[in-house]
Image 1: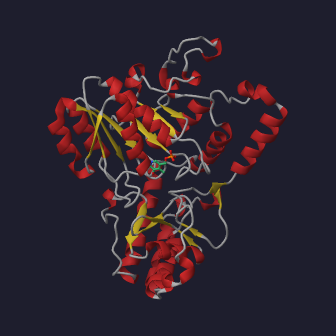
Image 2: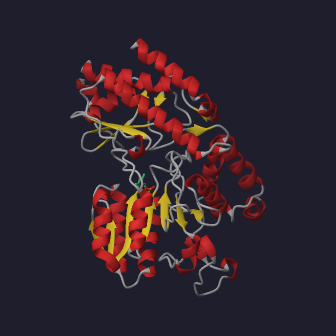
Image 3: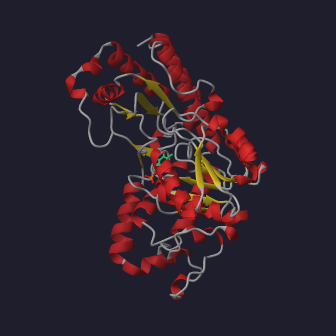
Length: 412
Ligand SMILES: *Cc1c(COP(=O)(O)O)cnc(C)c1O
C-alpha cells in the first residue's frame, strides 16, 4: 500500500470526521461494502423497530395498530421523511409500491395531464425495468416512446415542441454513475410545455436533488439502495403539489380513494398525494425503511454529497496512481458524478467475484462493468484505499482468472 496514499486517506478521514456515521450502521467486520447502491447496509435500530412492529404492534395490539401505531398514515408520513432527502416540501411524496409500479403510474398520469401530446422521451441506457415499463405504459396510454440519450435530450425536446408529453430520465446512470443535468433538462422540457419525470434510484440519499427548487413534475425512486430500507423496501413517488389535482393515475385502488372506509362502489381519488396510493401498504418493509431513515437524522444531504465526492474523488486518485491502465466509465468532473465509480474490464464478472472473496463487495453490470458504489454514511477514505489496493492485486496479480470466480450465480 503506497504510503502517500495511506497518509492522504488519514488526512481526508480527519477532515471529514464530522460526517463519518458508520456508528449508525451494523456492518460485518472486515468487509468493505461497495454495494450500498444496490442494497444498503443495515442501520442500527432497524432490527429492534421491526421486532417491535411484529411482537407488539402486530402480535399484541393486532388490528388496533392501524390507528394506534399509525399504520394507515405510514405511506405519507414516510413519504415526507423521504421528501426532505430529495428536496420536496411535505405532502408531495408517498412511500408506496415499487419503483417499477410507480413509474407506470407516473407515465400514464403524465399522458393524461398532456392529452394532446404524443411522445415520451427516455434514455436507451436506462435501467431495463424503466424501459420495459415505459413501453408498457406508453402502449396503454397511446404514447410513442423515443429513446434519446440524455446529452441529446434537450435538443430533441425543442424539436418535438408541443408533441412532447413527458421526458422520463434517471438522474444518475445506474451503470456508469454519470450524473445528468436535472435542472437544465427540466427547464428545456418546461419551455415546450411538457412534463419531466426523474428516476432517483441512484441519487436519493447521496446528493442534492432539489425536486421543488428545480420544478420537477414527477419523480420515482427506491427505498432499499442508498436509503438503506432493506431488501424489497417500498419505493416512492413524487407529484409536485401544483399537479396533484390533475394527477389521474391508472391504478385506482381503494387506498387512494377519497373515503376508503366508506366502501363506496365508485372510485373518487383522494385529494393530495394520497391519490397515488394503490392497495394496502407493505408495512413490514415500510416501517423498516422508516426506522432506517434515522441514519439521516441531523444530517444535511449537502454534507453527505460533500463526503461522497471526497470518497469517489479519492478512489479515482487511487486508481490513477495504482491502476492507471484500467478504463474508468464514470466522469471525472465532480459535477457529473453520482456516488459510484465504475471501471471496465473484459472479465468484469470474475474481477467482482475475486474482490468479494477478499471482502470488497461491489457488483457486476453487463457487459464489462465493475461497479463500486460509495455509500457516504458508512465508508471511510481508509476503506476506499483498501478497495483500490485489493482491486490492484486482483487485476494485476491475475487472480480473476481462477476458475472459481467465473461461475455466475442467479443474481449478479
Ligand atoms: C434499482 C432500480 C430500479 C428497481 O426497480 P424495482 O421496481 O424496485 O425493482 C428501477 N430503476 C432504476 C433506475 C434502478 O436503479
